[in-house]
Length: 182
Image (spheres, rainbow, N blue to C red):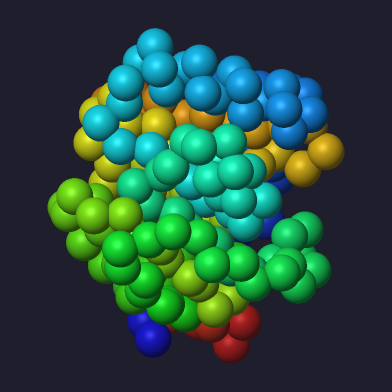
């Protein structure tokens, strides 16, 4: 396992803010608005990041082409539900990091036209940035915003640039280890 990126304390604070449009409300309200958005925009791909939002999308008959989960909700073990998928890929991605393995799995899933389910051993939150970076333009990446609703990121060149900027601000693990030993 090779760690490509490690979150910094400053970036952790910045990433608590929604990276796209926050849709507030209950499950029914947010999923209703999401379904309307999908019917109106007809995105080339829908990508969901997170257990609760992924499960809710499936329950509401909005089926993402790529689902990224870690079988946890708010850092607690979630029920391991089997969501419909043509392919399931397991990756390791420790909390606060992005591994090369996870990046490769997302990149490969974006290049295929099959429903892929990526199950993360670790934490999937930061993989939203990778999903935005490799998703086709006008795709939709959706993730949960705890206690508030869901965040919908319409993939645009500007959002890709913003994701890249966040990734560049992250420090490789080797650099962090060198700081600790100095």
